Length: 453
Image 1 (cartoon, rainbow, N blue to C red):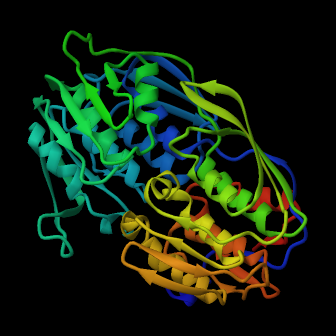
Image 2 (tube, rainbow, N blue to C red; image 1 turned 45 degrees about the horizontal axis):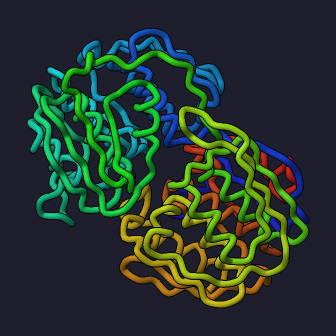
Image 3 (cartoon, helix red, strand yellow; image 1 turned 45 degrees about the vertical axis):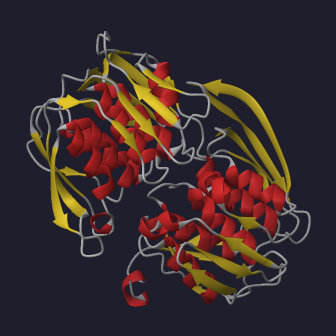
């Protein structure tokens, strides 16, 4: 995207900021909101959802369900879904538009694999570049027919738009090539509609929102002690999910940008309340601790088996460089852009490794992170599966125009960097709205130097 094209859209303008202080809440967890909408549609009866994420990705899931004949009424952060059960979906009269949401597309692949009709899944130009071969391969083994566009980067891969012709499925044993909550969730949804048992093994522990929520709703889904082997066994199950009230906690991935801002802007003291503390998602908090951030975490409740609480971060001087790799990288995969900002302001050289999956997110996030940090004057070395950052030790960074390539997390990372610059930083506001539409409002409420066009 060129700067000329970006300037046609509303911009956030940020500059060197004083201390950020206050208590806030972030939108409902995007990953849980997707599942809350989809799984509620598969219940029998009316389901009320509270705390729903209001970004564009969750709207894509709601729209896709409506196209399949499900009544979904969304008002602010609340939703009412009239569940139709696994056998109550109807063939859509048009293609399902997944927008920019890879979660929507991959989860619906699993759901539609077991439905007795054909469906086309489309997305925006960014989503249309994201590989879908990993989800298509096991679903084809289960009996679904999935067709897509050739993937020039992967001889056996496919790209959206996808055409899924569902039908009778059979359970399989499958080992995921990478730990992936989206891929795992697609196979669980297909497994619920299959004949026989489906066993899924993943090489690492990805986020487990699907397993927690489906068990809460009464689905025959179990895991072993490691959490990395999932068994779906619908034998003897009546095929029904119970309609129960659903409460979505705040999104820790969104909160991470505010927490990093508090850790790097001198004098800051920020508390985020009612945020999800699922241990498969809290890697970013462990990274900030390792970087010597002053951080307090307290669990205050639970929702659908998901721990919920508050997180407070106070500025305590320049952060310390660290290394993020292996299991810690997996548990902080979506927060890497925020943590890259922390590394950019830290003392020393931080290393980020085992992050090859970031190459195929909303953008090539490794390349995007490197580009934006370099724009801000930070030394970055890029690798195939990660990067290294030599931090400024808290010294001001350069301003300029952020070019996030329609990636909401790159846009927010650029905005937080802007709070440490003596020059103006410009960020396209619409790119952030995908997941965090109240981002600018919250930064302003905390005292951040931000204004909107």
